[in-house]
Length: 139
Image (tube, rainbow, N blue to C red; front, side):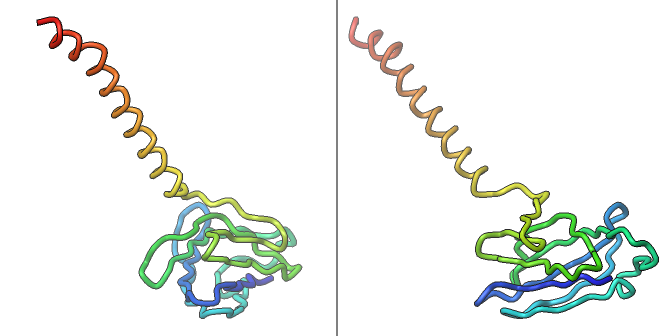
């Protein structure tokens, strides 16, 4: 059993941190260069290879500037399916399946802040037009 990691980026090296799923104790840290593939044996991750069921570890992916791109559980199996990391789309694939990230997409939260701010501005303009302006014109 091993963990096969593949960096699909053409320009960004990645720092991969692997920790245990529940205790979050760090098991390994490595740097994947551009278009590099590497394999981590389960023995190096201190995971029992006696079990026939796949084990799961927590993996986080960061850029060289320490920006967190992706974090989530990743299976370790004996079928040699690669974990494909694409930093441009901030996605991780296990074979053909996209793995979910436990971090929220910051782009959607920023757009929600902009929408909320725009709503408040429109609301203030409507209040000013309906309440303050008629009071000033009646005098």
